[in-house]
Structures are given as C-alpha cells and as structure tokens.
Amino acid sequence: MNVANLQLEGLMMAVASINNLLVHRGLLSIDDIDTALRRVEASVTGDERTFEDMSPANRDAICFPIRLLRIANNAQGEADIPPFTELAKMVGKTKEPYNDQQ
Image 1 (cartoon, rainbow, N blue to C red):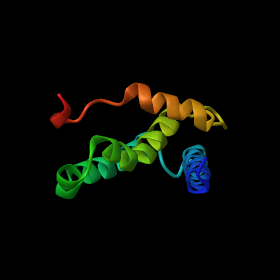
Image 2: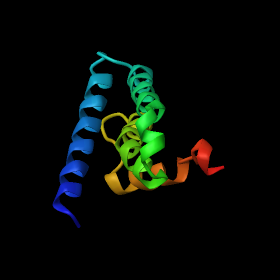
Image 3: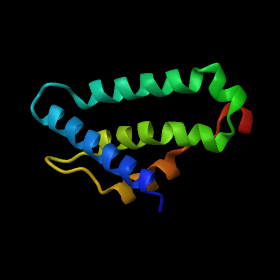
Image 4: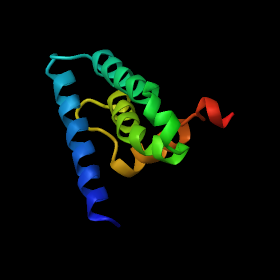
C-alpha cells in the first residue's frame, strides 16, 4: 500500500476523533458537523473543473474523505467511532452515481 494512503487514513481517523470529541464536549452537534461536511462536498462536486476534467473515479477519490468523515460523524457512539475499514466499506455502499453516469 502507498505510504501516502496510510497517512491519509490516519489523518481522516484523527479528524473523525476530533469531531467526536467536539460533539461529546457539547461544542458542536452531530448535525453541525454533518452540515459542514455536506456543504464542502457540494462545493467540491459543484466545481466545474471536477466534472469537466475528472473521471468518476477521480471525483470519488476527492469525495471519499468527506464521505468517510460524514459517516463516522453519524455513526459515532458514546466515545468511539467505527474502524477505518468499516467506514470505508460504508462509503462504498452508500455512494450514488453522478448525473453523467446515469
């Protein structure tokens, strides 16, 4: 596996853990974090460059960390978040095709 992928996996899990802590400390709600992540995904997927110059696989690569963080945020328990592999599987199961793929 590429070392950069492992670094990104660690970064995504660190951000998911921080999000979990923010929720459990009462600083943000799960809905607040979900809204922020939905907005950034809409911004990324609404970018003209993303749809004109990138393949669907590359679009998914850009959106993967955002989607993983949304799922981690919405699946968090009292103190823990699901492991990366489980979250990654959930991202794949919930992915919908883009308009130009239908």
